[in-house]
Image 1 (tube, rainbow, N blue to C red):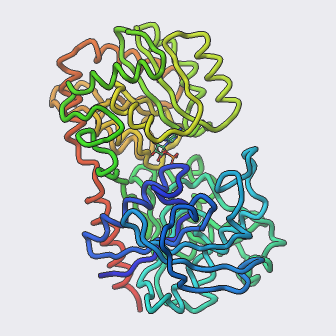
Image 2 (image 1 turned 120 degrees about the vertical axis):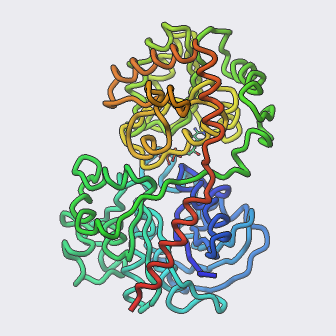
Image 3 (image 1 turned 90 degrees about the horizontal axis):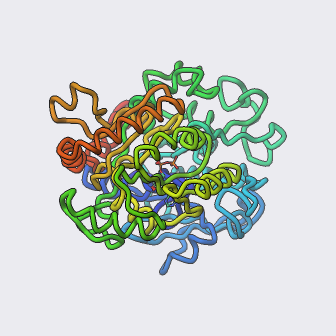
Length: 476
Ligand code: ADP
C-alpha cells in the first residue's frame, strides 16, 4: 500500500464549507481500494475537536506559530485522522476561515502555515513510526507544505490539487520570518507573487504533479481569464498538470437509501419528495419544472444572472426553491425577489439534510456558475434524477450531456448546458428546460440516463493512485 498524507483545511463529515470537504471525506475510502492508504491532516477547529471521541497524542510541539500544539490521532467515520490541536490558532468562534462578520481571520497565514509545517514534520520524521510515501495537499491552505518539507529535508514527493484557484493565500512580505519561510526563495520563480507571499504559488512550484478537479478547468486555468494570475506558472508546468473529475460519496448520496428523503430507485419515486419539498418551501402546485439550487452565494456561482433570467422560468409555470448563504447583498436581493414572486422561495442558511431533500424533490438543479472547477451539486442531481441545467464551464462541461438534437436522437442526454454565461443565455435555457419538461417521455428518458451515469469515486481514485505511482517511480 502507498502511504499518503492528505493536507487539507476541511473534511466531511467533520467540517465543511464546500466541495473540498466532500472530496477530502470521500476520496480516502476510494483510494484504499486502489492501493493507497490515506491519513488526513486537518486543523483542530473548535467544531472538529468536539467530534473526535477517543484520541491518541502522536506528537507535541512546544511553539507552533505562537503557541503549544499537539497532534492527535483518531478515527472518525472511517477516516484515519491526524488533527492539529493548536488552540491559539483554531479554538475560536466564527467560521473556519473568518470571524462572524465574514472577514478573514487576520492570522490565516499563520493558521495554515502551522498545518503545512506539521505536514512537513510528519513527512520528515514520521508519527508513531508512520512516514508517508507521498504528501498530497489541497488548495492554498496546504500550499506552503513543500517549502517546509524542503527546509526539513523530507523526501516524499508533494502532489497538489487545485479545487479552486480563486483563493491564493496571500500574505505580506513582512511575514516571511514569522512564517519561517526562506527569504532567499522569495522570488518570482518561487513563492513571491507581486511583492507578496502566495501560498498557492508555493504549492504550484513545489509540486511534483499538479491536478485540478476536471479536464476542462485544467485547460481553462491556462488562460488569463480563469488562471487569475497563476496561468503563467501553470503554462510553464503544463506537462505536470492534469484534470481528474471528482466523484460523489454514494453512501451519502444515494436516493435508494438516503435517510433524509422518501427513498426511490426510479424517477417515478420522486413525486412524494416533490410534494414534501413544495410544502417545506411554501410553494403551491404548478405545471412547470420545480428547479432547485444549493450553493454558496457568491459572484462565482452566477446568482445575479439567475435573478435576471428567472422571469423566463416563472413565465412557463416553473418554480425555484433556493438554499444558500454568503454575500449579504445577494442574500437580500434573493429574499426581495422571493417577496415579489410567489413561485420563488429562498432559504438563507446551510442545511445538509434540506440539501438532500432538494435533490430528491426537484425536477432540475440549476448551476449557473461563471467558473466551476468541478461542481458537486450537478453530480448529486444526476444521481437523484434531478436534471442539471448548467453553465458550459469547468466540470459542468465535463459531467453533463447537453440535450442537443444529436444527444436526444441518440438517447444519451442528461441535462442542459448554456453558453455564454449570461442572463440571456440562461433565460433561453429555462425555456428549453420548460419545453423538455412538457415532453414527458423525453424527460423521463433523460432522468433514467442521468441516474445511470457513473458518478462514484472509482475512476477518479484509480487515476489519483496512478498519479501517486508515477510520481514515486519518477523519483531519482
Ligand atoms: P464549492 O466547493 O465551490 O462551494 P461544490 O459544488 O463543489 O461548490 O460543492 C458545494 C458543496 O457544498 C456541495 O456538497 C453542496 O451541497 C454544499 N452546499 C453549498 N451550500 C450549501 C447550503 N447552503 N446548505 C447545504 N449544503 C450546501
